[in-house]
Length: 144
Image 1 (spheres, one colour):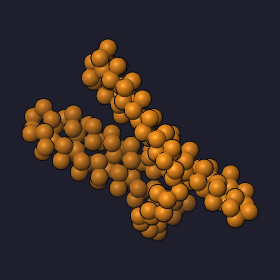
Image 2 (tube, helix red, strand yellow):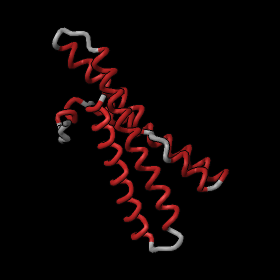
Image 3 (cartoon, helix red, strand yellow):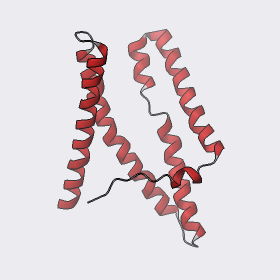
Image 4 (tube, one colour):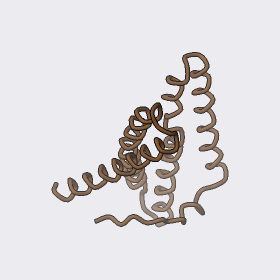
């Protein structure tokens, strides 16, 4: 069973320019989504705003940091870095399933209910779906 924990040590490894890359990537994605929304409306623009702007930057940083850790020990870290980025991508994909549930529940509830109530329900759906996907993945992994 995998233990979920917070490990702030990664914050020390990340340089200021790496944070800047993440910020710029998110900003560019937001601007492009705004331009798309201006041209084709907020429904279409929102789809592009949902693009995971930070994921590409974080996946490359995870790969780089894992590779550097192994190289400091005199080992080749390419495979370890790739594996770490792949695991991060799997987590992002599982979380995205929950975000689809959030969007669907929000779209369904917002027209008929108070927005805080609708967003609360959508958030609970996101949490339950994401956690359920994670549990299914863990059990499937143990079986095979």
